[in-house]
Length: 194
Image 1 (spheres, one colour):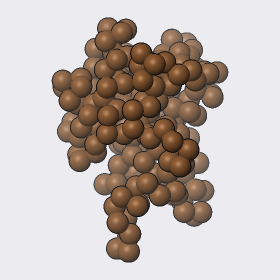
Image 2 (tube, rainbow, N blue to C red; image 1 turned 180 degrees about the vertical axis):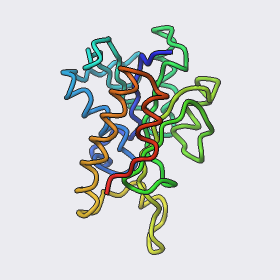
Image 3 (cartoon, rainbow, N blue to C red; image 1 turned 45 degrees about the vertical axis):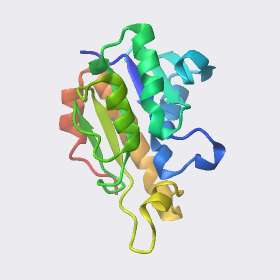
Image 4 (tube, rainbow, N blue to C red; image 1 turned 120 degrees about the vertical axis):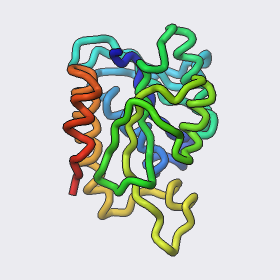
């Protein structure tokens, strides 16, 4: 099944910009910029939406839900219902504390793993059988609570690493679109940016 919708998860307010929890937004922003997309608010989708021709030459839709992380599934479901997309054609991109910064993990399906945006997406799509790209943000150190870690901005030394991570994510998405997810999984699931 080819991908038709790429969704970056995050929170809409400026105070969440460039936080660890908004790395999904950062990825789809980068893809939209690379492929010449212009974000427009679509009320019927409760999100920012654009349609682009990627380097793979096929039309693809990009979505940034404006529902806040915990209700992301509402926005995703609105798009899949409107375009009649099956869940397997939707790639959801989001942060994962269980992976270190520098690692990504592509999967064809799976549980929410405690991520509220994914819990909402699974609930609204009625299945966990859709691809996802998890981007490592690392765990909080002992002095910091999980919430302040996730909603915090990247430290200066992490920001250097982040550019390499975003480049690797971009490449993995392009391979997923040009070839397929299995090939991208084989190439990128074992790579690490250092």
